[in-house]
Length: 118
Length: 113
Image (cartoon, rainbow over all chains, first blue to last red; front, side):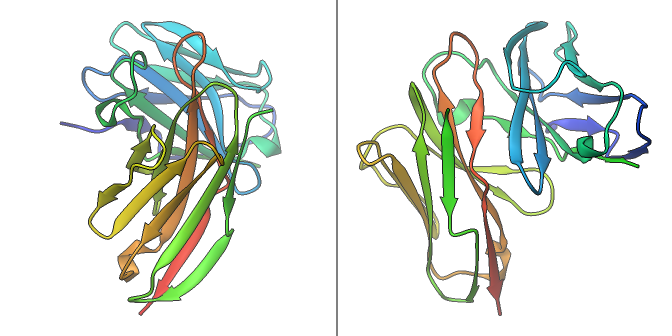
């Protein structure tokens, strides 16, 4: 089956602009998480959505927001972009996110959206 | 504050060598520890560990967890150039709902021919 699909793969924005990134999870997966990856901070958790509801949120400012649609596709938005927002944004999905951990229910990552803010 | 620390930061080995990567953690409400391999973009899943002392093995890779000393190791034997990647350790914690992985900074492995 198809993996996690993220679009766009690359984009360049200028400070002050906003950006919307899209993520289509693996078919049947209802939990979608977003992570930011930078050379200095590594992978940091942004938020997680399940059944169109935000279940967990990381320590990022309110400029970072997201949503999930009824078909489990998710978008994240960053407003008023800053230079420090330049990063690889990774989306990951899993089937439910609940219950006992198992190898069949781990996060599967997409290839990411590389955002450069000038 | 939850913390996951990986060591070494990077290492260079030659094909055929064995490498051992370390991951230590200090988190509340531990649920599982995961290892991922990241070559270009998407981290790919290697292992999930939940119980102490039980080795997980996949080909030349193996991993074990020590929940008393709060660390895990990932071993790669008979390394190949294709093993060159960043290896990420992450801890999953029991929260009120859902999951939130806390990642270590990664170990960059370069395998030279």
